[in-house]
Image (cartoon, rainbow, N blue to C red; front, side, top):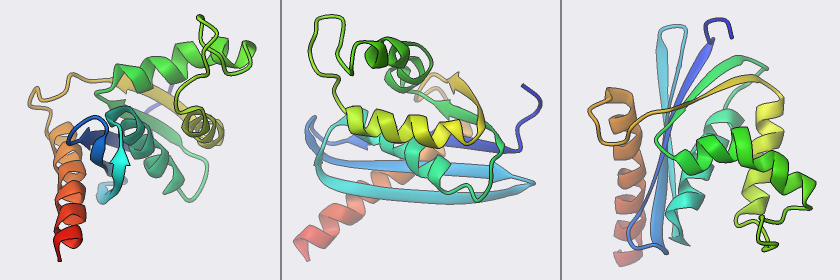
Length: 151
């Protein structure tokens, strides 16, 4: 892939699994950055990891060359490897169970199809500044959700 026009740094967080969760995204394009975040009251970490990437791709206004950075092997391997077999088996796992979060996987695949996407896994909590920032945004979203619930 040629150099990306857009970088998406995405992360999800959950307090309890399931529990309150948040997602955070840092988009970088043409020397500018945009931060996005959101939360759900009762969710899982994997759902928040997926939502982060979905929200990042959904924020793009036109088809682009995109490099997505995630610290979730679930997301990275799911979209680049596992999804092909899930679809072939009618959204079932190898053990014939329904694929968890299938609606999110479908949404992610549809959004990714509009772009030229390169998927990069990065080690979480390893000092990568933009990954740490996405994590902080996800946790900020949870904090804001919990503060609203107590108000």
